[in-house]
Length: 325
Image (cartoon, rainbow, N blue to C red; front, side):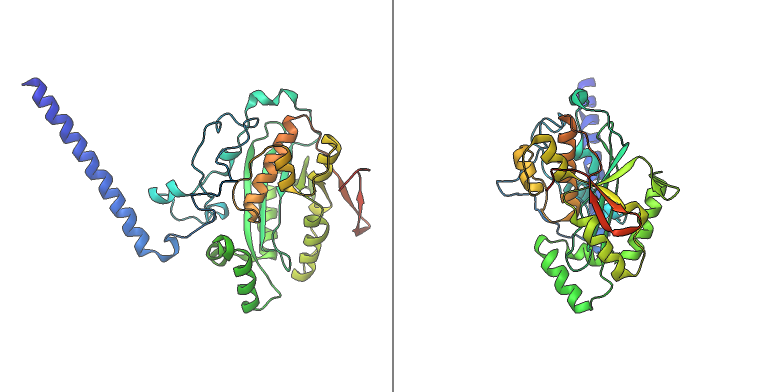
């Protein structure tokens, strides 16, 4: 009798829990249907990636990802602090909400690292040819190589007609399925800079008008040498003082490995790092550049400033490496 009573009790608990789960899912789906802003949106790449994509990070960088895991694209509302579906189990299962988790570095691999002259790297990769459309920055520790924080904003052009903006966004982000997120969240460049400066100060990276043992890392000189000054003129704001110097990772790569790589994709192929995410989606490119930076640091590279503006004539830039791209 005791056995049968115990068996009945277990069955009762099981069915009760299943009923609770069904009720939770029903409530979630009901909320999704009531709120159009947080309904399902499509973000590329889909869960079934082309053969040339990988679900794992380079084994030399992370043991926690050594086994094959399902790729989940970033929730681009979350990267901007605007995700309203954090209690939606289906949404959480489909989209990644922790940028740092996919960029973990195995501490055991840090024994070759050199001591750096900086405490943090701000990895940046702008998107937009006419005007800046996306401003993503990852804050990476120079000691642990971990991603400490993220700043990501979509940027609304200020000198283009609405029709031209729509054509611009459709041609750029419509192809990878994130145009809706852009339209929902994009703000003018002036506001982006104001929010970015508040973020820099909150992280204690910008003190007294100077970066505090911190430097921007870009893949090329175009982002900070050319595009930011152009955008500042269009948006009618002064060029911020923290954009006076930067690190072009391609120059560091050339001098450290003694081989030329014209861009991020070439560097990743040569280092056998899988390309993850959508190429030319700024936040994904920034993460892939971070993977290259982590790999180079693990290999023992010294990451130094490669370009500096003339303080008397900011348009003039001094390039500090003899061998450079």
